[in-house]
Length: 340
Ligand code: ADP
Ligand code: CIR
Image 1 (cartoon, rainbow, N blue to C red):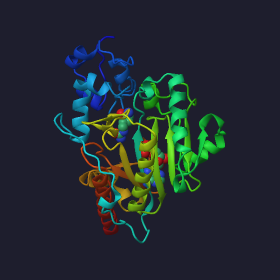
Image 2: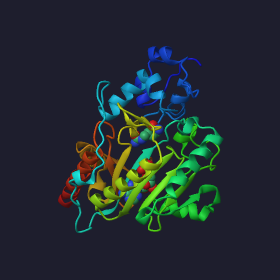
Image 3: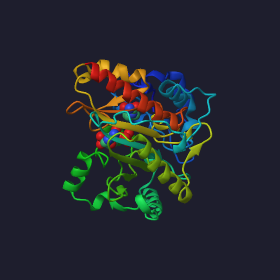
């Protein structure tokens, strides 16, 4: 492949220099992941924010001259840094930022995980993806109490049910062009699905961008309770599954923005006053290390002045600290809203 010229303002365009291309272009991981696979999404989608996906654990070391500057830029995490995890709810001090329930519609905390000893989604074969699904579902069906639920494979779900679950924020969207270009949508909908408890407060997406997206969510702003539920689920799943993990980068994920905690803790918050100036809202959120997305997640618009506000940094920060900062930042946004 000849030297590509990535367009746009993505991190790929910033860091894929001719020197990096020359250095990495003939390398191949043991699962056959090559540089052209890693950069495919960003080349195809010039409006990418990041533009790269790892095909397996080894991608992060073999293609480090490309990943490391992207990771440093996004997370502020240098080559010498070490990631530390803290999933102990007793360490969390995150008071409800909206005790009267006037602004925060709902809270959701998700983490991404991939199974050790398989490639990630963009490099899985159809057969391997089915093995991943069966392995994950076996572990999930063993859960009890509040975490007990059932698995719903996507192929067996009718369109209306799928649409309803997507609209109510429980299920991943379909046909994401960034994931498609990375090879993450191959064989769709085979071996994809969703597990959830009857209340839909604990959910697991199987074989979307990552092999597992483990989600705790509920109406309101009780971050403490949402976090505690998630950590209980993680402890149970860690006993049944082995996840891809690195001493340096923490939990390993398809997209380098999710490394480390692999956690995105978010609230859906209604901010009609601040909505009048979205640039100012985003700048205010950024001051608190928070990212603003639309009502239907990444690459969507806000509806009814409801914004998805979440931690931007996921690597080089503990889970506990990321949730604490979310509580603090959301309280500040609500205070600013009250002044409008
Ligand atoms: P991810 O959370 O995996 O990074 P998305 O940004 O696509 O991916 O969000 C996935 C879904 O979760 C979307 O439907 C989004 O609206 C929903 N969501 C995110 N945060 C919340 C929240 N606090 N309350 C309800 N739904 C949420
Ligand atoms: C992109 O590069 O825009 C997509 N591949 C998604 C990147 C991760 N999301 C994010 O930073 N908000």
